[in-house]
Amino acid sequence: MHHRCAENGFSQLILTQTSRVPSSILGELGSPLRKIFLIHLLRCYVCYRFSIEDNCKKVSPIRLADRSHRVWMLMKQLTYVYDYKFAWNRSYFALASTSEPSLNHINFVGAWQIDQTYQWKPKEQGFMTDIEDKSKGVVNLLKQGFGPDDFMMEVAKSKVMLGIGNPWWSPSPYYALCLGVPFINPVSCREGIVVHLSKSKSIVAWEGFELGP
Image: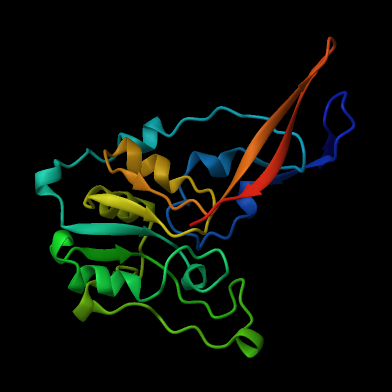
């Protein structure tokens, strides 16, 4: 389904139902974001309101003192620590857990799939080695039958959720925040807003600019 932005002649909006998102993507199976439309566009932005309140109420926040000493890594595919958007170094998590005294041997956990062909070409880009190293505090909790309820509970047990640069946007941080889990996200690029006003309408144009890590 295609439409153009009203009145301004900017490029097309591409409306894609979130039901097309692969069901294997963890944490999004029961998300209300799957029940609305994702809007992809070039120079116009339209906002839709939605609520995750019902989902958040399914899991009670856990007191900080009762949570596991761990960081939840926002990654659902191993590919995310190999592509160009990755904000850290793959050795960072094990080093932070074992070599940084101030972190008190904190664990880095997540639930990521290992799919050598997910947004990756192993014949051209090489084989991706898993970053899990339980002996150094990096643990993949993915197991058979891991679903949205498991995802919510495991996030609730964590002290913080850590972004890794990809995905750039995700509903998961919203779930973390409603569970009282703070979200840390690295900034590698950002978009500035230039607003052009006229008597008849206002147009918001987005101009990208690069920031340091």
